[in-house]
Picture 1 (cartoon, rainbow, N blue to C red):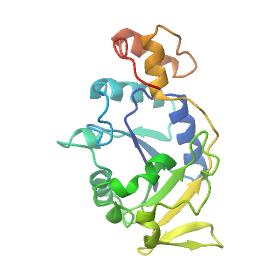
Picture 2: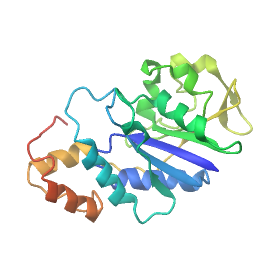
Picture 3: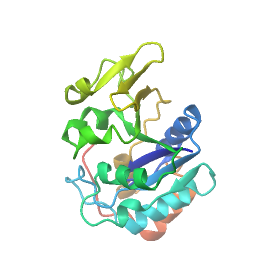
Picture 4: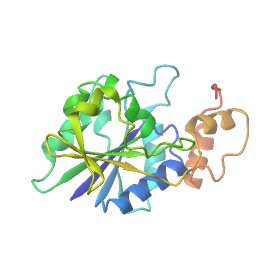
Length: 220
């Protein structure tokens, strides 16, 4: 099986997350794409994060009708911060001999990967799919490799991907630009504005029922 690993805070999950995940799943013929809510995100220190049970519930509601999507709570069962290397190791240990893992992340996160825990090791455990971000004109520039990882890859001009010395692959993938942000959704709720068509209806109803984001406003 080809398994996609799509981690994030999902605070809240929105249509941008879902559409992007579907485009990646289809383009790379993934058999399953796992949504992996972070327990304690190591890079989200500037604001409080909504309780895990609410973020998990919203993801479950959002992906319920897509058979290609699955919720994974692997990061919630581990104590401490949710580091990607630990998550990938968990899946690498449990995968079948013919399974392959594809780690999905946005360009902005990839450019900061040099700050990740054991970032050099993670490339040998799975393939990477780096997706474009709205407003980033050069997001598909294959030369835009973080300095910290340039020496780890060589470019295959015929196949148009980077190859790691372990044999894993790194792809840059252009998504449909959908400029929806979780922070904007949280601010809209705080201001009493509509979030319809920014999140699935079931997620919108959950946010209202639970009273999420009402006491929080963030900088844009």
